[in-house]
Length: 351
View 1 (cartoon, helix red, strand yellow):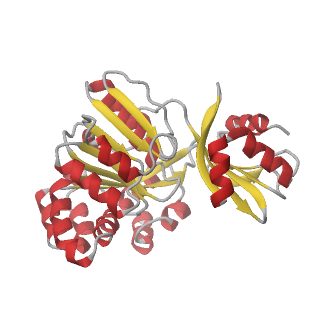
View 2 (tube, helix red, strand yellow; view 1 turned 60 degrees about the vertical axis):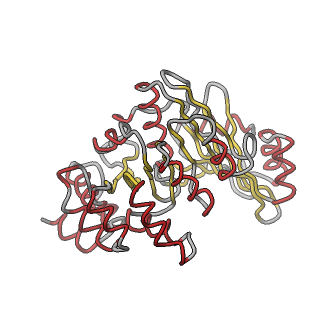
């Protein structure tokens, strides 16, 4: 049983994830459903061999120390993978996320047109949020590629690990990977500000220092793109503010109100009309009214502002879900299960 054979089978089935766990056959996730593959059960020895086949000596050393390591792996001519190796029941376990080698055009992602408009912003902070596996990386990669084909600018990406590999087009793109090219997001972001960037992509605003530096970069005239594991715009704003000590929260509200341009929150659905996935999207655009809401700590009003500003491109999650349902893309049960307000959406779908 060769790793390349498993990955080829998964690729042919359009799997998004592969799980290699001792005591189970190789498993693959296809359109959100995890199913076993037609291969023998993985032993602790075979799992370890597969890990050692992919990892560098430095990654193996990190794994020995922490029992966890993240890295990327590429099979030429097939696909790139984001890999997490970990210990479970005293054996190596591997979780592999397939990364498409070609960045998809924004127009092919079934996203609202307003997302394309965000790629014309000259400065500020744009956040794409959602659960793990909600398509954040793909959306951001498509946005970066749109800017790469349009502008003569300097783009720096800070990633953990590098997912889509960009080819410089009109822009010059530098990609740095956590561990291999930089010790921390915060350290790399601090130095990136001295590298004459126009656009900076930060893989995740995962701590206070990185968040503060990202906001500072946006304040000083850069366009900063990043992600958070939050499910809607209100929660995103609150999460950022809550990272700060209480005595700094008024100041950060003001800074965030001045720099934030948009929050895009995604949830992926399995399509029922054709094979594949489709995102439902909540979009918050930072109008003067939204900036005042952030500044005055009235984030509970954000959902109402989104509902009353559809004409300029804002959209609530449930509106996006309902639209996909009525267009025949997703099933009723799935739509209601992932809605922000299931009871309200259920009445709307009946109507």
